[in-house]
Structure formats: C-alpha cells, structure tokens
Amino acid sequence: MITSAMPLLQIRNVTRRFGAFTAVDAVSLDIEAGEFFTLLGPSGCGKTTLLRMIAGFDAPDAGELLLDGRPLAGIPPEARPLHTVFQSYALFPHMSVAGNVAFPLEMAGCAKDEIRRRVAETLALVHLEDKGAQFPHELSGGQKQRVALARGLVNRPRLLLLDEPLGALDAKLRQEMQGELIRLQRDVGVTFVFVTHSQQEALALSHRVAVMKAGRVEQCDVPDRLYTQPANRFVADFIGKINLIEVEVVAASKIQLHLRAEGLGAIAATDPRPLRPGDRGAFALRPELLRVHAHGEAAGLKNHFSGTVRELLYLGDVTHYKIALDCGLVLEALMPNAAPGRAKFHEIGDPVAVSWRHDAGVFLHEPPAR
Amino acid sequence: MKKPGVWLWAAALTVYAFLYLPLAIVVIFSFNDSMLNAEWVGFTWRWYATLIHDGEMLQAAGNSLLIALLSSACATVLGASAGIAMHRYRFRWLPLLVLTPVAMPEILLGVSLLLFFRQVLDLTLGFLSILVAHITFSIGFVAVIVRARLAGMDESLFEAARDLGATPWTTFRRITLPLILPALAAGFLMSFTLSIDDFVITFFVAGVGVSTLPLQIYSMIKVAVTPEVNAVSTLLMALTLTLILVSTRLAPDVLKGRGAV
Image (tube, rainbow over all chains, first blue to last red):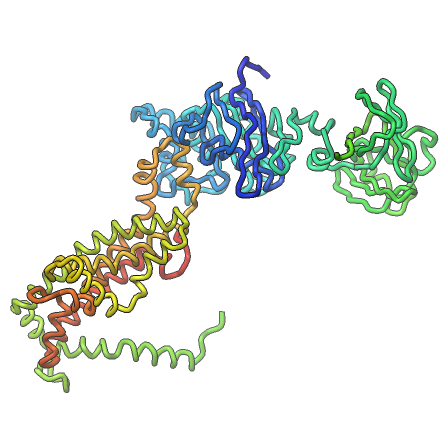
C-alpha cells in the first residue's frame, strides 16, 4: 500500500458520550488514502457512532477529526467531501435511479450534459446502465445496493463511508456484492471506511481492520495478522473460531516458551516477548492448526494429548471435531477431508490424540488487573 | 379468514342504517315535488333552481367557500410546520399543545375565541374572526396527518440528502416537501371540509352581517325545514363526501394507522 506523508483521515482521541454511556472512548486511528478500512465489532461497540461523526451527523465530545490535515469540526455534512452508503440505502423514492445518482452532482452545481455523462458512466460501473429510468421500489435489494453505491461514488468523494451496506442482503447476494465492492474500490480508487459486525466480511474485504469493543479499538491491523496474531482474548474470540486454554508461564528463553495448563500439563510454544515465569494468560489455538491422530499414533511428541471425539460436524470439504481430552478440556479441530476415497477420518467416541506444532498457538499475556 | 356470520351482517347493517338513513331522507326529500317533508309526490329539480336564485344563500355559500379556501391554505402551512416540528423535535408538550384544540369541545373553543376576539383584541366580529377561528381548529388535523406521513418514512433519507451535498433548505425543498405532498393535500382537503361544515364555532364568532352556509341553513330551519334546506344540505353532503374520499386516498396512513410506502 502507498503510504503518503499525511493520512487522509486522522481520528485523534475521539470520545462521544450519551449521558452516562460512553459510545466512543478515546479512539485514535489513521486512515490512508486509497485504503479499504473496516471498523469491525459487535453491535453497540461504537463503530456506527464513529462513522456518523466522520459524516458530520454527530460531533465528538472530545478529540478531533482531520481530513487531509484540516479539522472537520463545525463543517456541516453537506460541505464534507465524503459520502455515506446507508444500511437502508436511503434511496429517494420520488426520484428515478438516474435522478438519485444525479443528486450529488446537481448539489455540486455540475452542468446538465456533464451530469448525464457521469450518471451513465457510474451506472455502467455498477452494471445498471439500463435501469436509469426505473424507480427505487421497482428494484431488487441487490440493485438498490448498487444504486446507493453509484450515488455515493458518482462525484468521486475523498472518502466513502459504508454503514453495514450488505446487512440487508441474503447470503448468496452478500457474497456476490463483496466481490463487487472490492472491484469497485480498486477501480475508482476512492478510500472506503466500512462498518460491519461480520468478521468474515471484514477479513475478506479490507486492507486494514480496526476491531472495536465497548467504544475502544482493541486491535488495528491487516486481516492476516489480526487472524494469526490476535492482541487479546476478545479479538481472538471475535475473529473466527479459536480454542482458548488458561495457562501460566513456567519458563521463557529468547524465543522458547514453556507454559503449563491446569490439568493438561506442559505446552511448548514460541514467543519473542520478554515474559517471566508466573505470567498468566490464555493460549489461543486455531482449530485448523490442530491435528487429530488415531489413538497411539505419533505419541511421545510435544504438545500431544489423548482424548475422544465427542461431537463432529461433517461439512463436506472439512469436518469440525470437538475432542474431549482426558483432563476434561474440550478442544475444537478442523480437518480437511482431503484424502481420496475417504469422507472423514474419525467417528464419535473414537479414541484419538491431538497435537500441534510448537509455533501454532499464540500466548495472550494478561497482566493482573491493578 | 372466517367469513362474518349472519348476525354480524345484521348488526353492521343496523348500525349503518342508523348512521345513513337520516341523511338519505334529506337527499330524497330534496328531490320531492312538495313543500312538505311528509310524503313522496314526484321528482323535481325545483328546490335546486330556487337555491340558485336565493341571493342570501349564494352570499353565504360564497363566504363559506372563501373562508374554507383561505383557512385551509393557512392551516396547511401552519399545521405542516407543527407536524414537522413534532416529528423532528421530541418535545413532549408540543403534540399536546397542537392537538388540544382538536379534542376540545367546540362550544368551549367557540366561547373562548369569542372572548378573545372581543375582550382581548377588540376585533369587530365578521369575516376575519371566522377565518382565524377556522384556522385555529384546522391546524391540529393537518399536523396529525403530516406527522403520520413523516413517521412512516426512513429518517436516513434526510441525512442522505445532507450527506450528498444538500443544505437544510434544499433538503426540505427537494426531499421533505415532495414526500409529504400527499399529506399536505389530504390536510388541506380535511381542513376545507371542517371549515365548510362548521357551525358551532362559527356561530359564536360570526357576529352580525356575515353568514356562512351552515349559519344560513340554521336560520332557515328556525321557520321550517323547507325542501330548499334539504337541497342545500344535499349539496353540502356531496361536497363533504367527495373531499373526505379524496383526502383519505391521499393519506391512507391516517386511516390505516400506519406509514405509507
């Protein structure tokens, strides 16, 4: 990604309170030009409030927002060079599709023939070139979504804010629109700030993701690092499926880490951080990094524990196992059914063993609360 | 759904008969070729012809129409403003304040307006006092209709307009106004109906010299219910019915108690 000297949008220590409730709590983020940036979090985490402050529908109680280095405070929504795609699309029901897309150009005072040209161009961009004369109520959900995107992009704003734009679509259409969004953003080069509660959407679409919880940013990173190196228990648990094991550090050298879990015993891991014996936290392990063996196979290795298959979910390409270890701990494992001629490898009740590489998991250090 | 049974039909018919039979009788006797509302003699347009040549009646009808037009125009503007304000600013007391005149007994409103015009403003009763009184009781109805229309609309429409570069005024002109237009038309027609039919309040604030259609009818029946009264009542009824039908078609959300699409 091209990183210019100045971020396009700077969010500095922004706080927004509603009575005693702090919706956004001292959030600082930098969003670069050309980026597909996602605010991800459960409902009520403050992501939409933050979006509304960027759009100008709401104002921070503290902190500031800078666009191209200039403060946005006091600038009304109509004067901000950014547009919003609403979850409900908010298409004007009394205007045709072309009328809706032309609206921001008219507001900007463009000439008639230029408006016509750019509306046609933008409708072609979202594959709706033949729908210009139709009215919003005549369109399907996916088509409305495209009109809303066209209307937001037609006069090339500095920033396009998208508030859960795929939330109202069914699963198949949502997947289709995801591909479409990536293509659109790449083709028009407009910076996207995308709000969603779907971790799958966030990982699939974004260059960078800020995970929010209770008004705070828990972690801001590229999708693969967010997935493989979650900063804390919340991020680990929110993004994808994960096994969390309560552990304590026994010994730590340069990169070697020896952990101990109640009942389970010693776990070997790696961690470059300076950790001390007695440090506590969670050991996070993705299900797809666990290997499930037939009982007795590969015994004697590190991070090797025996148990039985308690539940399984056969999904065709993969099987999702729940393995009860001898100590009572239940771990989830995801196994690809990649062997020719075999549908799955283990059945419920089978005695099995699980193992993982010493660098498979992540130790989430949790200093005791003061 | 279950079909309504015989008894339900009978009950419904009785109620509708109770409501509409007296009206039907007025209509029928307005075409009766007899001075007495006693028995059917034969069909005639005579009483309608008499109406056209009744100078006082025409004067009253002219007053009624002019007052209805002016008062509903003013009430539409003021009521729409009130409706928008009630929708946008959630002041608890605002709806109460706007809607109270709607629920207030007419006689109270009439008496208090009379006192207000005479004692406080020292206004000579006449056309102006009737006009102001009619505006007063119509505002609430328009406000309710406009608010119902706004309540059924997606709030983000107005935010979207601002977001796409429209100032608050442009947003009102290009988005809000076109979207509440059916409600404005319905409110106008509703006010018109209320104004043209009003008797009680008008009676108090009319003073001497200026008469409206309902006042004129009243003064005529003090002598006797002539077929001419039947004829003018029938015309008034037809006008009212038409306006009500049109206004409920324009603002179905008010009748159905939900937002229009």
